[in-house]
Length: 246
Image 1 (cartoon, rainbow, N blue to C red):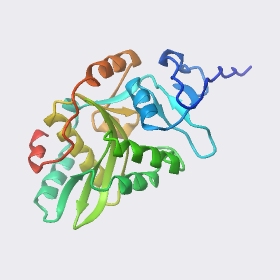
Image 2 (cartoon, helix red, strand yellow; image 1 turned 135 degrees about the vertical axis):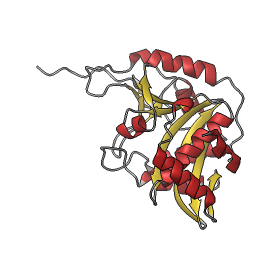
Image 3 (cartoon, rainbow, N blue to C red; image 1 turned 60 degrees about the vertical axis):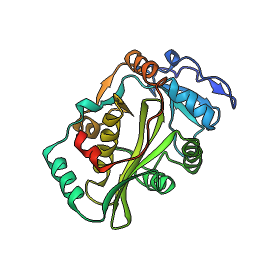
Image 4 (cartoon, rainbow, N blue to C red; image 1 turned 180 degrees about the horizontal axis):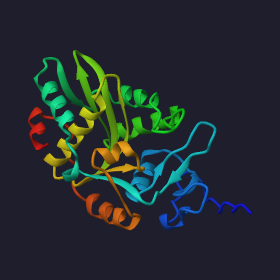
């Protein structure tokens, strides 16, 4: 007999999230699912991320909130700078017209990410309302884009959320080979420069594992949040000397 799904709390706009301990477990149809409804205003998103919760849903679904266990996390000191990427960075640094920019085209970055499905998925979760929500969060100073540019063209990048020293990677895209890896390496360099310890990657994938990310349990992740969030904001810019931190 199939197992019935547990009840899912429905949130009214502005309503507090349930405890993350109430997230659906491994024996449920959607492990990590916590609640539905609510809103995507900056204050709501900041409350969510501060408690290890993030929105993720597809077209035709209500807003769904997740608190996954385990949590894929990239400790910046464990970032794997593979030989091929090291050569790519060196070539990128030495090529005129190639540069890393921060927050110069956030809206273009999130739009490009919306056209890039996550591993093993069809379609996108970065729907128009999600793009609008994170653009508002960007204007509030808590969402940032790391961009790979060549000859005046945006060829790759990623966007993330940041509260204090807690950095939450969201999505990335590439229009040229390794352009998204360059952006990720730049984010790691920024994090190391500012002594940010980790980058949240949310979900376990082989690509992230290849780059050095590993899963940690929810309790450990919450401890990481409690330590990182109260720290002062970092300076979101990229200096070419930051490459020396890799």
